[in-house]
Length: 192
Image 1 (cartoon, rainbow, N blue to C red):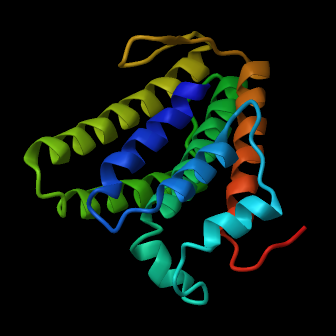
Image 2: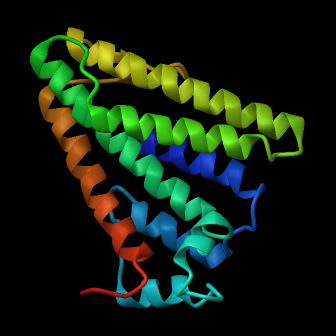
Image 3: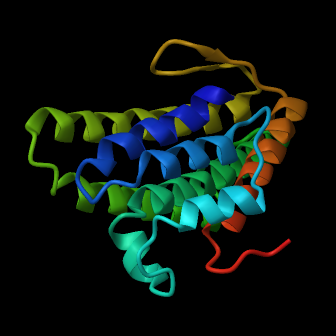
């Protein structure tokens, strides 16, 4: 399960070099918020995250520049959530299912990565980003096919992901918790 989140973060770290980077403190906070086992978001973490944002009222500008990692993380979480929800339905119905929300989330991620990767001047880094995206898409298709056939999934990187309805539900629940925390962190105002 941690591998799923690390894929999002590795991709984000590769892309962060193409935009104004977030501070080390902001990256550390995002990692704490997304931690599968002990993730949390506190008012202090929120305050520490946003103190490094020059114009908090211009959220759009932040997300398109310095906060590109935060946007990518959020969009990546949404993609993962919709992928696993589609995997659950695929598992239950014994046939591959792709929800409209999954298709939209996949298009958003693909479009974003294609646009940003063009701005990476280093050819090796650009190739890494594109290969990471392709690997992620192959793994996504493999997950849906494996769920539909109720078999364990062999990932492109090698590890086998055990699939059962209970496991898929557990992954969805963990993603929902992380998604909720990252949303709370990225709001322009703190809400208890």
